[in-house]
Image (cartoon, rainbow, N blue to C red; front, side, top):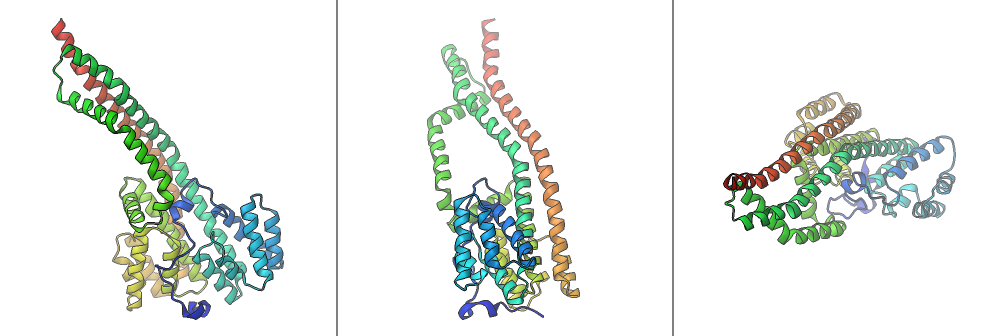
Length: 379
């Protein structure tokens, strides 16, 4: 029997993508080094422990007090303390969670469903597994990108050093000797002059973007540009897309297990995963479903979803095995994320080293060609 989300909405309030939610972008929460209050690592332990303690017969108030005593950071303690106070005041866990900024609409509705159906311990267990996999994917991404990023940063510094300090020394020699410069040398000298004249402006601009990033991340145009640009990056784009599809299939699997209708699942997942290409696709999928189209046909209209996913979803619809199929898809994407993270780390390292070697080689050749010509003239 399906579970109707309208039973848990106040005043028949419709879930809208334009409605302000408490969830920040997935990239900020899951694929960055910034440590936010009650982040994903804390949520993983929180939901898992709530599930275990509820199954053991401990009251929800006692559960929150035990978890509060186990926290070291005051911010996390304050959040759990407020949750406990709300429970004592007669509110449900979902209502208490809704008031706290670190929690998303997705978590609110999942917990509300668990309370309405008497399966709160199961829902919290699933939420714990949800964040466990998200944290694992975050670790895979960081592991895959850390070494290539270090190499790339070093490479940029080497090239900048050569253009800013080495090339000007050769340039002075060429001017003193009045040597005719080859085309490649003129290009390198022009790049050096550009870096000398506008380098500080570029550096200030880069630092400004980093400082203003929290403000820019709230702008639709910035998120749209960033997400689309990320998808176009070689290797990284496909890997990031796989991570989001893994999040999508896991979220739908969790909601399907709670007997949430498909259209409501799409609405909730669209609010939870703040990735513009996926949000845009899910918005169109939601409209198609409301017009009477099947989920598989709706997904097939978007390149973001693979033919394999569409085929399996079609099988799920025909056999009424949505939970099983989406759970299987999630496992497949998790395996793919692990494999691609290893490939990403393995492939990017030699490519970056090769690019650096070519750049340094071109700069050296461009500087030494006039020297060879000068030595032949002197000789």
